[in-house]
Length: 152
Image (cartoon, rainbow, N blue to C red; front, side, top):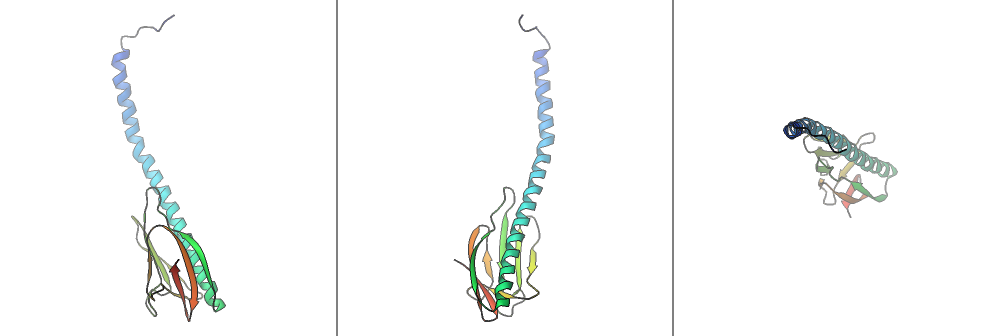
């Protein structure tokens, strides 16, 4: 009751390994593409959600006429996709004072317009606040007619 002898077994093994390698070679790029697309979508949704949370808070405090809040924004990279930048506001009267712009690697720049009501935002130095990928504790404060956004 031992194993039966098969003279073709030794010759068949390289063929089987070749078939496995071909199937794996065909499948791997498809799996990678699927994971990349999923990761890109998740990073885009997360960054856009955080930007909308920031802009809604800025609108809320601007309409209230004052106040401030400190909260955490999460712009961390995905497994395959990077957050290149998040730019908040512009200098006083600048063309991007009520815009938050961001870019994810492999895509064009996206912009979120803060309107209805329009709210001017700027960094603590009165210019665009530039953030890279990461997790930030952000402080919003209304000063005059604009919202000052600073990293604490």
